[in-house]
Amino acid sequence: MAGVCVWDRVPETTREDLLGQLPVGEVWGIGRRMVKRLNGLGIVTIKDFRDADEFRIREKFSIVQMRTLLELRGTPCIPMQQERETKDQLLFSRSFSEPITDREKMEQVLAIYAQRAATRLHKQQTEAKVVTAWAMTSYFNEEQSHQPSATVSLSAHTADPVVLTKAAKALLTKISPGIRYAKAGITVTELRPAGAQQMLDEFASDQETKQLGALLEQVRSEHGSGAIGLGRAGLRDGPSWQMRREMMSPRYTTHWGELLTVYAK
Image (cartoon, rainbow, N blue to C red):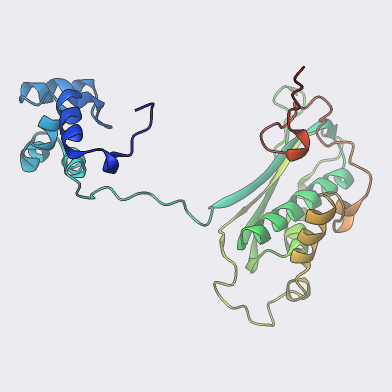
């Protein structure tokens, strides 16, 4: 079958012959130990297993094997697990190319990450209720060890980049100048679909009513991720702490501009 089999299109006589030839161990979820026990009951092939008494199989093994048997008979018992539409959290984190030792640069880090989180939330049409910002020194820095973090529970679910940025900056008071921080990150949690609950006008931020987050996303999609930002995240010059990517391998399979070029002579 060249590695591909559309089971419903296989003639019934062919299917019966195949099931009668394939050992029961070929069934997904039946391991070597179970094969020995099934063989002891006279069940050697997949056909033997399919035609066995389902209640006996449940008694000797478990309801899982009973459901597998019924699936072989064409009775749906194991529903397909659908991909969740909403993720539980979003994480934005990177190691620095050079350590950060002051609050000014750390503020820029937090602003950039928080606004990236806002952009992602807008793309997947979700909102967050909790923002956690953290930083850490290198595992190899034995002289300094510091892992500060700050968690802010927002007044309402939001994807507003201004609100998320302000919340992330709660970490700054815990940053100790002179400490060589090697990594930092932002995590937004308690996500829900955008607009799941209408917000009263008194609690809605001005930026949110003006769709500032959507505007930032549109500008970045048209002109690049570094084209616009709020506060220190909008500085045109690339931050010195960002990861160096000069030696990054080409992304042949994910970016059109980096497709591998092959010449034939």
